[in-house]
Image (cartoon, rainbow, N blue to C red; front, side, top):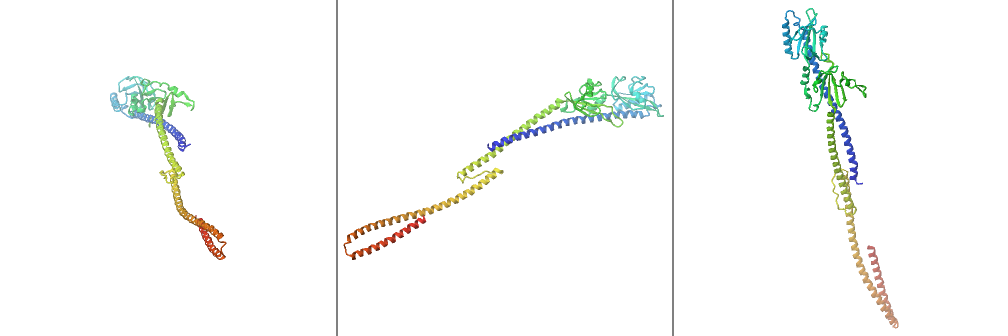
Length: 461
C-alpha cells in the first residue's frame, strides 16, 4: 500500500471521528448552557418582578400606616367633610387607590372618598375584623369590592385617639390593574419580554391558585388557574416530589412546557409577603426548536470543517507522496548509473532531509566515480603506450626472425659448401671452420640479446 493511501485511510477516519466527538461535546455543552441561561434569565426576570411587586405592596402598607398614625382622621376639631377632603387630596397624590374609607369602632362606614355605601355595616369584612384588633392588614387574594364593583386589594389599619385607644379603621383599596402596571414598567406586558420569548406565558398567582395577572389569558384573571391543582399535586416519580412547589423556585418540563415557578419571597421590610408566586411557561418545542436550529448550524459547520480537513489531508498526502515519488525516481536513475542526475527536492520535513542526504550521497558517489574514471583513463593511456612498445618489439622480433631465417639459409649453404669442400685441404677446412665458429658465436650472442629484449618487453607489458 502506498504511503498516500495509508495517510488517507488513517487520517480521514481519525479526523472525522475527532471532529464528530468534539462537535457532539460542544453541542451538548452549548445546549445545556443555552437552556440554563434561558432558565436563569426567566428566574432573574421573575425575581426582579416579585421584588418590584413587594416594594409596591410595602409602599401601600406605608401609606395606610401613615394614615393610621396621622391625627387628622381622629381629630375632633375637624369636620367629616374636611377629613374626606384630606383623604381625597392624599388619593390624588398617591394616584394608586380606587377609594379610601373610614370606619368607626361600631363597624359603620362613616366616610369614603367616593361617597359610596356611607353608613353600611361591614363588620363581616376580614379587613375590618383584623384592623379593629390593632393589626395592619392587607389582602393576600384580590377580593371584590361591593362599593366599587371591582376586584381590589384592601389595606387596613386601626385609628388611635389621644388615649391610644382604637377609634376606628382606615381602609385603602388598590385595584389590581395597578399590579398589572408593574409588568408594563419592566416590559412584560403584551409578551414584550424578548424577541426569542414572544410565546412566554406569565401568570401571577396567589397561594390558592387565583390568577392575579396573566399576559396570555385575560379571562383567567381572578380565576383558579387551569391545571394548578394538578401541577402542585402530581408527583414527579423520578424526584419523588410534586411538580410545582409554590414556596420555592422550581423548574420543570411538564406537558411539553418549560415551567418556572418563582415565589414572592419574604417581601420587603414591613411587608412580609402575600405568598404569591410568578409562573412562567414557555413552549418546550420553541426552546428546543431553537436548539434544533443550532444543531443544524453545528452540523453545517462540522461538515465544512470536515470537508476542509479532508481536502487538507489529501493535499498533505499528495505533497508527501509527490516528494517521495520524485525521490524514488531519482534514486532509480542513480541506481542505473546516472550519477549526474541532481536531486532537487526542497522541503523542511523528514522527506526534505532524506532528499538532502541522498543528494550528498550522490555527490560523493559521483566524485568517487569521476576519480575512478580518471584513473582508468590514465591506466588506459599507459596500456596504449605499452601496446605501442609491444608492437615495436614484435617488429624487431620479426626482423630478427628474418635474420635467423637468413642465418639458417647461410648455414644450409655453409653445410652444402662444407660437404662440397671436404675434399679440399685441411687448411681451407680450418679456415672455414674458424669462420663458421665466429659466425656462429655472433649469432648466439645476437639471439641471447633478442631473447633478453623479448623477456623485458613481456615484463613491461
